Amino acid sequence: MDNARHEQFAQSFLKHQDRVYGHIVTMLPNRHDAEDVFQQTSLILWRKWEQFEPQRDFLAWACGIARNEVRNFLLRRGRERVVLGERLMDEVCELRAESQSLLDERRTLLVECMKKLDFVARELVERSYAGRESIEVIARQFRTTRNALYLRLRRIRRELMECIEEGLVKEEPQ
Image (cartoon, rainbow, N blue to C red; front, side, top):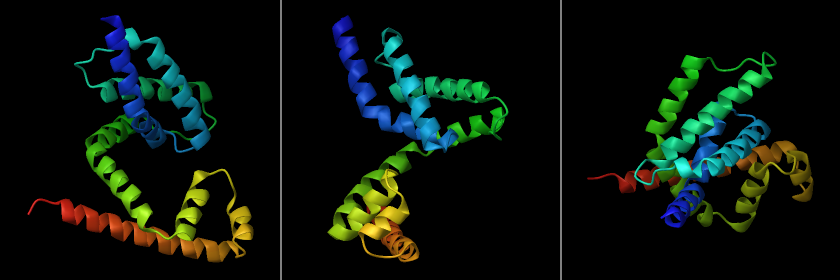
């Protein structure tokens, strides 16, 4: 029984890890901080896998642990930065949970819309938002200016947004 439960836990973790990370990013917009807290959250989830009950909502359980880790992170940070108050953080978490299905739908549509972009546009978006290279480096490699690259990215984002909105309209019940 434990092997089957462990397998269910592992599958649930793999299925929901992006959503847990997204939940953390909602509260910690600094990517490096969010990644640190996600790693800590992942360790805790794996240590507590025996507490996982397959009939419970894994995402809610994991996000609860993530929320506690964000709170611990902010407490360790002390007063270095202005942070969300406790009540506001609760409201943000609740809003995130309520909008999860819409976020999932938009994410799925984004993947499909990205496939419709030409190779260069897709490459620009992926490299610009991966965060591994600066805009200056990417602009140099594409033999353009930083401002021209920003303008091109704005047009691509608009195109992606229109594609996503069209997809949402098509999926609405008539």
